[in-house]
Image (cartoon, rainbow, N blue to C red; front, side, top):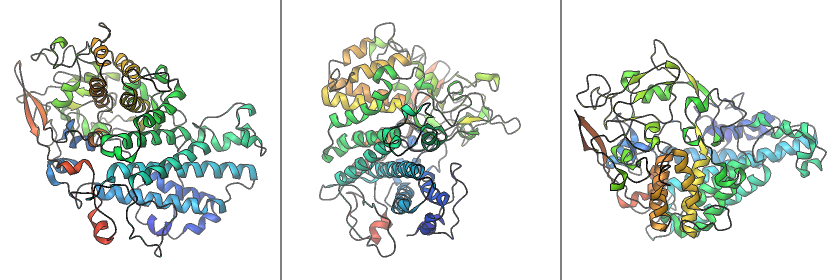
Length: 586
């Protein structure tokens, strides 16, 4: 399929690339128009699978949606098939993105980006690295969504295409094995890491320019023109390494362990990224609040918050708040955290609330708790919108509350669980159409805390809670730093963590819980539960408050069959191509 044919289907836009591709052009236009060549690669950026909204958390035990037509909600209720759900769009977009990348790579050497030979070489290196990193990214999401076991028990991946295809290419091919796909991903990521700078920053002297470019006559001005801060937001070496680490964690996990990826290898891949910031010492002190007004501020598009590995370009809006603020604050309250998630936050002393040593009070359930509970979730009586005095209001969630925010009070906009989401949103905006205040937002793609938790998970499985492999820090030390940052266990030496470090099994439970808390509403838990082969059917619960009485209740059942730890290959493709074997059960 030619690039021009694919572009007809594109409906989104990306402000990193201009002008837009005209659909009357084809891939041969690249040879004479360098900007058009960059636009071909830009199409792969446009199709990246990231979202600012916590769309799939509502199909887990962490959240529900008050939009009863939500696709993920209906999937969680038992309506997920190979013909329905969300898998078809992702399959199409990943394959289309790889096609754009392969067209770009096939023609890259024919494109003149600069008439100066040294600059042309540098541009080709950078863009080749970007393309390979993006191809690794697409393979990661394909494996996460569609990797699975056939009826015979073989662990399969997807098709591997490293050349563009057209009408003459036989597409009726068996799926490659999961391991073959993983090897291709790692190969692409490795080459991207070699070609790209770790991050895009302006160098200050010729001594900092890589020797391979000094050897062809480049100086610091040349280097900054190609690899400088003006290229920020695009694929860089650190991002490619982070994607490789994400894929390694997936492959080492119980659902995919037959891939042959070891936990030690997965830990090593994460450590490569973490060592660049000094390991545990580099954990950002405000990393758990990266989304807040105080941390985002007026987001620069040439530098990142210390927590962020990769993000999208900042844009001014309040759409996330319009969707998720409580109705009294002019929002639709779409994502409702569950009691299940609220219960996962420990007491301030670090003990789970199920442990008597936590001093948890069921009649005052939100006091003496992990501070992240208040940072991430709006509970009854919470104040919403403190900063800047744009909005300053207490939210009341009892079922008989005399305002819009009460449990099931406002049809379609009030909470179904007794909670509203606070995380991801800024507290200095106003969604009121009569007095709208918008601020800078950006979509986080990958952040360092995710990689720290990936390392902790893999290191604990490989070497136990306090083992370090060849690195300077252990799973225990990572989790200790994350919990200290959150402000829990500070007055008792985090006695629960000290107990947990004596058992890999107990530490595993703790690491998974910390991952759940730190990364909630970031579209990770849906896939975490599957790669762990964990319980997918824990019913979503809420909290009903009547006076001083707190009573949990079931909000929504989950109905996932055991085979749904692996997603389906879209039915139409299996129907169309006889050699594509569906994952078992679908």
